[in-house]
Image (cartoon, rainbow, N blue to C red; front, side, top):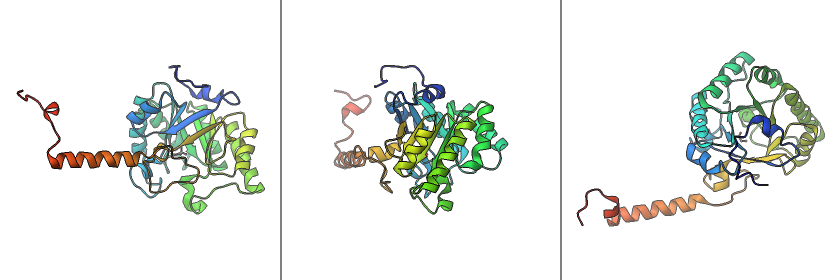
Length: 273
Ligand code: KIV
């Protein structure tokens, strides 16, 4: 069922209550115009630290700073009338201690107006999530393939490939649920692992490269639109190729300027007829 007609703001509570009722639709955004365009169609907008790779051309998400995430988060919130906005906490801003995590997450929520934060981690992070939620910070936990852990995981490889690692993933997800996470994002895991985690939880799972079993799906918007060609993961579906359209527009602009066809009098001030 489409929710286009409703302009009621979607909250972390209403997302949590969607488990088993209807699929949760999510995309990433880093800017106000993109957030405004997707807002009627999505339930959750994730301001991903993927912005580091997609918008800044960095090799990984690791150099992304809190200031970058706050600037992008605030821009996205200005474009999101109804969708619930979740901002990624960048590497190094929440792992050291739960107190540091609280200070940085509180900054993100107060300075952006977003409703929740997303943290990548495993059992080492459960205590921090509980600390944050008890103090009023809604948390989405990100498990499975965790790009901030790429150096430890040995790259961007699908996770939970066997029974043991799947059982660990299920335990991790359950621990985050007990700690108060309102959703668990599962990235890049084998299909059976995504099914087992989703079945084990009362909170919704949001999948990216985690099969159809999840309660919701998210993709990186630039992958969907064909705007990011450095690397396309297997799980990303490209619905269109905007890069091609944009290149055609730039080429037409170049031609018109060089030929003196732009601007015409329609684009100029004070032209006497
Ligand atoms: O950074 C990102 O874009 C993400 C996606 C999985 C939502 O974490």
